[in-house]
Length: 608
Image (cartoon, rainbow, N blue to C red; front, side):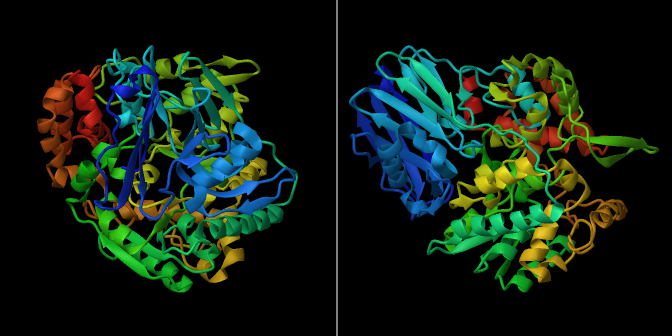
C-alpha cells in the first residue's frame, strides 16, 4: 500500500512500522528510515517522487505522499511544478518560508518534516485533507499512518472500538471529521500543521485555511467562463508531465468535463456489465473526444472481488464496493501511469452539498425545490443528517440513536461551530462544506481505493475551483447547470451527447434534466429484477440475492462479528435471511457491516 507510517519518541526503536501489502504487485518502491527516536516507513508508486526523504538547507528531512502541482508566490502568481518533484519542492519552499510554505501549495498531499537538531516533527496536510493522516499518542511517543489500519501499535496502547463511532459508520457509511471508530486513533484535521516535540511530548496545531462562503454578485455567464477557464488550467496542471494518463469515464458529465478540457485526450476506462445505456453514452463521449475507450466487464462475482481487494486498504469511508476500480487494478496500472477522475464536481458546483426545500407528494414521492434551505442551528443540522439519503438504521445495530451521537459531537466554538473536531465559521458553512472539509466526510471509497492503483489526480480539487465554488451564488447551482454550460464552452460536441441518467443532451436546460431523471428512474424500475442495471453501478440488493458471498463473509467472520460492540449477531443473521428471501432490501446495511468485518484492523482490535 502506498503511503507513510512512522513512530516518534522512545518507542521508535522497538515498534514495528509497516505498510499493508501492495495492491498491484511490483508497482511500488518502499523504504525505511531510522534515526534517533524516529522510524519512518514509506511506499510510493514507481515513477513518482520515490527519492525521499528530501533534505532542506537546515538539515530537516521531508517526506510527502501525494502530489503538488503549483506554488503560489507573494503576489498570488502561480508557478507550475513537476509532481514527481513534490518532496524536493516542499523542502525548497520550507527553506524560503518555514512551515508557512504549506499555504502556498496546490495539490493533494500529506507530509512530514523532521528536524533532527531540535527534535521536532511537523505533519502537514492539504486544504481539504485529500490524503488522510491518522495518529495515536502515549507517553512513549506518537504513531502515525496514512492508513487507519496501519497506525503502529505503541507500548501500552490497547486499541478498542468506540461503540458510538462504529455505529456512526454503520449508519452514515463514514465517520465525520477527525474521529475514527478506534479509541485513541484520530485523524489530522484538514488544512492543519501539527508539530510534535519528540522529547517533551508537546503538541501544537495550526489551521491555515477554512472554507468561507462569500457569494459574488456576478452574472451566471461570468461563473461559467471562470469555471471553464479554471478547470481547463487545472486539467493542464495535472496532465502536463510526460506520462500516460487514464480517465475513469462514466456516462454523466463530471468525468466528461475532463475530456472537454484536456489538450490530449486520456485513455478512457468504463466499468460496466455489457453495453448498457451508461456504457453506450460513455463510448460516444470518448469517441467524440478522440479518446481510446475500454469497457471493463464486471460480472456477478465482481463485488466479492472488491470485498477482498478493499479489506486491507479500507478507511471507514464508504463501503467496500465503492472501491469501484480495484478489481481491474493490474490492467489499469499496466496501461497508464496516472488516473484522472471527475470526483467532487457536484459537491462544488451542483446540488449535492446544498440542503434544499422539499415537497412530499403522494406515494412517498419527494421533490426537491430549487431553493436553498440551509440549517441555522446545530439541531437543524443534526436533523438534516439523520434524514439524509445515505443514512440507514440497521435492525442489527443496538447503540445510541444517531441523532444523539451527532448532537454530542457538535458544539459552539468561539463565534463558530465545531463538528467532530473540525471547526467551521457557522452552522450554514458546516452544512455547505461538510462533504469536502475534510474529504473523508464523503460517502465513497472511490478516491482512496484508486490511489492504491496508480497516482490519482482530481482536477475539481484545484484550489482555484474551490475558491470559485465558495464565491458562486447557490441559486446558480440549484437552478442552472454551471458544469454543463462550461462543458458546452470547452467542447460543444460533447455537450450534444445525452447524460446517461436523463437521456437529454447536456446542452438542455436544467429543468429538462430534472424531468428526464425522474422519467428514466421510473422506466428503469419496470425492468426485470437483476444485478445488471442501465446505470453505472450494479444493484447491490440483487447481487446479494444472486451470489452468496455476503453469507460466506458472515460465516467466515462470525467470531469477530459477535465481539463487535453494539452489533446483535442474531439480528445480523435474520437481516440477511430476510434480504435473501426478498422480504426487505438491506444490501447497503449488510455491505457496511461486511466492510468492517473484513478489515484486518477489526480482527486485530477485537482479538486484542
